[in-house]
Image (cartoon, rainbow, N blue to C red):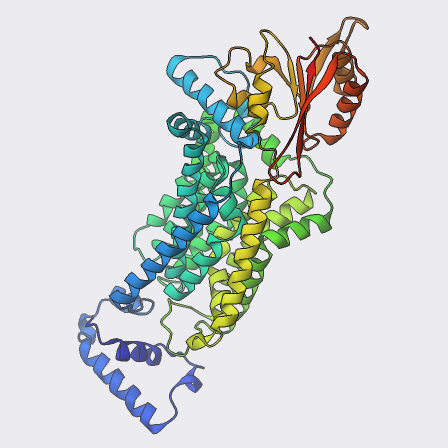
Length: 565
């Protein structure tokens, strides 16, 4: 098809794309009618004779829109600025290793030693990890071997930057580049994006794989061959990396049908999801067979049969409102406005919009995905990892979020100030909440050196989060994992009572007997147990308070008690 100047190609497409019932949108003045007829005549002259136009060419002309190369490069430059901003906002947060980071990286080192040298593992990690220990922990440990925790976190940052890029690419295909930029700029400053970009855990890797699968589904929607099936193994890899990703598989399956329906045929609405489900089910069955019972146990324990918490519905709703409340509102605005009208401006170039029913379903699928994690965790009353899980829904909902921001800005950018204010609020919320989450655990920059002063051969140590000192002190011969006890669980044999004690009784008896060389706690992970331990230590002549270490904003304090002598 001959490419016409932008002033005519957009108008000809608008006139040609009118469907029955839309005649009222056509130009009404004589001048407009004459101009429209001229444009249609010029476009018709540029097309091949009807008998030589292939059906595929007609179909492609119905959903592709022309973009000037200069506009494409300008859009890509803006994406580069967005990614730079995201990186800066992410790296501004600073804290020592979180307990999950320390655990995964340490186990990753053990897995590498086991795979390469046959070294024994120190636990049945597949039975209780929320992802396969041979995937992300190994990747993170490899990076940690090169550049420590900074390098491991850099892997997460790269993955989150890639996720933002994929959000842009997916949205541009579903709508246009204007909506794509709005989607990317909101996603880039959200709390889960900033937080996960500086955290060495499963989440960034799984989210990036989820975004890649969604992008492939959208990108290959126009292909004659079933290239979208490439998404199936990627989704399975994302689930294996972090089991909670399974929650978003239905959204991807629905997207497979919706992305292809207006671009190929209505049968794609059912054929593509069915084929994706079949391949995904077959690969899942194979993976389950290969993984073995320990992985099945871990999957059930961490995903399907999670313990119910004690968090109230109101507190969980308030947390979600801070993390993704504004993107969720933008998604709702985008879904409603897109169902009513596919374009923001009369001559705006957009991808194939389909019928109003199609637009309604697409908006509901995209926008509804952002609510999946909040609904699931409100159901079981737990806030554990919710601030991370909401990011998985946001990566799929981002395109309709971009539509919402675009509609707020309006046609011809008439409400730009309001759009900037909305994005500024998103930026402020994202920065503040991500920073609060990142400073929520104790800074161990002082704790680890102070703790290491009291290491002794064959000594025992009671710490609230044993993963952190085990990770940082793993090269010390007097700080091996079997020397640590956590405030989560204790098994202590009391020689005086001739009993094996656990729980509160075990901690009290062990402290009274002077069993531990060092006791450290911060009232964060197990506050009730910490209170009992503190009271027992204060009454025991065997221990003295060595130091109290506050974190950066003094919201958490680490108490270190040391055995006398």
